[in-house]
Image (cartoon, rainbow, N blue to C red; front, side, top):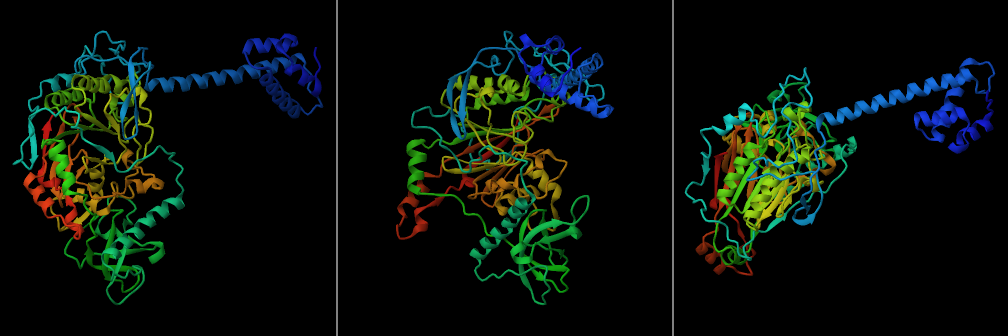
Length: 637
């Protein structure tokens, strides 16, 4: 029998294993724990035991105490082991560890071309534009790793050699390569290959950089301040354009017509906003943040959505309702300009008068019953044939909404799928046609391979496992960038769908609904102006501490907004607006967009150069006028 006082217990459990008394040494060997851990567990056990018994026992190591301590220790470690096993199975149920292979990889920078480097990774290559290599170290399962019987999703074979039913249907599709819609059909499509001379290279520039940040740390006060600042900013913009304007408090009663500024909101507890539920939220400086009901009966037509900043005129006779008499048009963003001399030198001296060809596609890139990425392979066949200068790929690349990802019936990490079926195919094209094409990647909130789940998203952060080829730019979402000084804006967060679902309109001035939805972004000077978003939608999350990073810095020449809504290509107030739709729709193929941007006529540029006058600043610059010289084709994959 061993008797332990406080000092003796400490010396017993903190001594070295070689001098440890037999009972303690046996426990160390059996459970493989540190002496300090065993000591703390004994202290906790004997303290609870003696306080519960109340018999004045100071903690003698009796056989009964020792046996009880062993049982307690065994139960605790057994529960810990079961918990760790459960967590391990939960993590492995979604993504299994791929087999090891040694390949060459490349590093990339934010908004900069990829740099070459060697690195060992768990990736293998594919042969001939995405067709699986028989020598690949990845053995795709012929049966699912795990079948959740209650998931409602039937297990589907995932094997390169065993195609799913939709794969055969996709291979036999009849409308492949058909052009669904064309904008500016009078312009020609460039048929020749890109110029590969050393001088010929499109210049890609990032207008707004989004660095990685910690989200979910947003405070309610900071969110309120960000929303309030937007109202104040638009008030200043409007007063700068119309200096005589004097804004009043919309919630204060006036007998005369006054002009107010605020945010459109809805007081409906549930369901879609409607004309009767619309209210105007004032800023803290102009109205203390109060909300007032809107009466729209006096105006012939309108189009609003929650989150829209508006300038209204009307009367509030009773302090409860603001009767709108006029909806003011907001000042437009300035279009990008350039010197005629610089533009002439670039388009005709450097580029040789050759049009720029761009292909833009948005995910998903695979059918919904396999992860073989056949639509992406078909897209790359078009790319191989078309030989564009720029390839814009927009997420989701590996979607969190894909049925096989949801059910966990996969055998590789998402990064491995991306590297095997997307990066390797892109690398083959770049190796076949070196220094011809620049690749732009824009993530999506549905991307499993991206860590940020709210807007704005930085470019892909952990890019080494993705094994992207040289000439790749990782852009943020939303993205504002330039190609040869022309301004492009992209948002992959289904903003058109959100606007379509939240819009309240009656006899709107612009009857073209898709064009009206696209115009909202430019009018509101922000790539995601909807607030609040649908709480059930994964693509409605916004971090308002970073909200200003989604503000448009200048009016874009081209806006690309991929959506599930019907694809379109149209001119909206001298802006080319494009919805390339999705490359894959469930079990069939979708569409992509092909843009051919011609240079401005050499004679027109020559006249602009001749008319330049240093005393007339307006004559020193010219607009890009992309809407006049850009042909857009929506093509079936």
